[in-house]
Image (tube, rainbow, N blue to C red):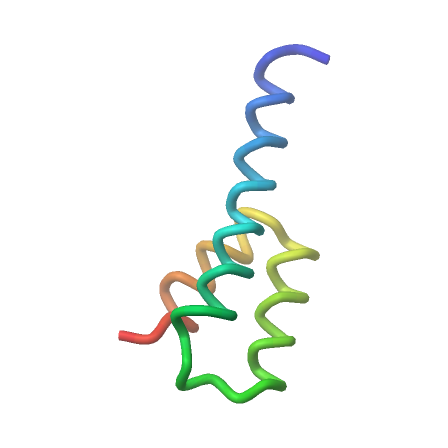
Length: 60
């Protein structure tokens, strides 16, 4: 694997971890169902899911 692929994978992993952490600890206004939905979105879509969560799902 080249370094770009490894860095992209690491960035995707960190994005998913950030979304899971933020959903479970910081975003208390979400229902449990919506928390599960955002975690699934993050796991399935990685960086794109994290960006969508940042702009749409995150508590203001």
